[in-house]
Amino acid sequence: MNRIGTILIIAFSTLSLSFNSFGQSVFKKAEKVPDSVKVGDVTIYNLFKYQILAHQNNSYDSIMIIDKVYKRHKKIWTELYGVLFDKSMFSSESGMINWNRHIYKENKDSIESRVIRLIELDFSKKLELAIQGIEKLTERSPENIKLSIILSPFEGIGFGGIENDAFVLDLLDNNFDVVNMVEEGIPHELNHFIYDPTRMNDPNKDTPLRLTIDEGFACFYTYKYFDGSISKPQAVEQMNNKEWQWYLDHEKEVYQKCEPFFFYQGNDDPLRQLNQDLNAPKTLFYWLGFRIIEFYTQKYGENSWLDIYELPVNEVLEKSGYKQYIEKL
Image 1 (cartoon, one colour):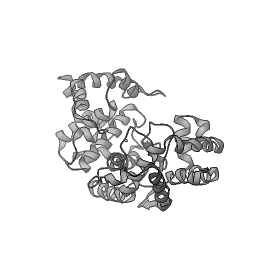
Image 2 (tube, helix red, strand yellow):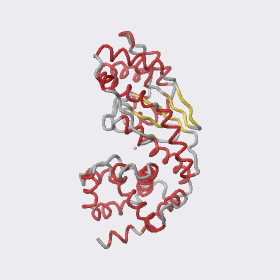
Image 3 (cartoon, one colour):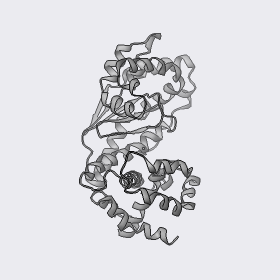
Image 4 (spheres, rainbow, N blue to C red):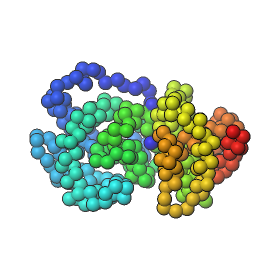
């Protein structure tokens, strides 16, 4: 789906607070969180704040959920979660009231620990540094970004969205560590934000090949952003060396199974299906896109990755020489 600066380590004393004082500290800390933060043209809505405060004093404030969570960034609920998951849960006030009634109680320990870690991280400062970094490296700036930090009843999105004004960071997605999600996820997503507007005239902008290049490029940008302080596996969905080696061992098979679907036109998601069929670790097309861009850069020079913002995705593949490399394996 940023590793800006040094990862902050939460003091053991904080983690060892008693259950009661720990819970009380979350409400007090949440009250101090601003409703929103604006950095450049990026607005962050801290919706999680009111998903927590709605349960303060052993009560449940459903009006707070509607006014401060649902209506504040309605698009993420109706057009993102409502489409991907259960529409009635996210597209009506009654549905939102119902699942938010239980989410804090059922996930209390996880919410409290992850929210405290997020607050300690100073999210807005991380974002500010990441925006400065992408402007310096690419001379481009993300525009009209609206991102909500939320507590979701379904895992699967983590850090992502559908359009620049409908992105989320889900604090309850246990597939991700909060610190790493923030520090590594921010630059990854910022690259999506500045790459997406360059695809308007790409004839293959709605194909699996575009998805492959787009995600691989976001991973590659993250690797460049950290300038050697993280490994290639870590830049691609925080893979470990064993997972990376799996792909190297199956590289020809991965490419040959994906290639027939590069220009697929339809409503299915063939590359994600291949991911399951091959039992591949992490997300197959993230790694494949990274490799294609890596080969392009090896061929045309250290800073040639900047070309990707302007090139049609098919041209990136053709010029990279990656297909020719695969044929020789």
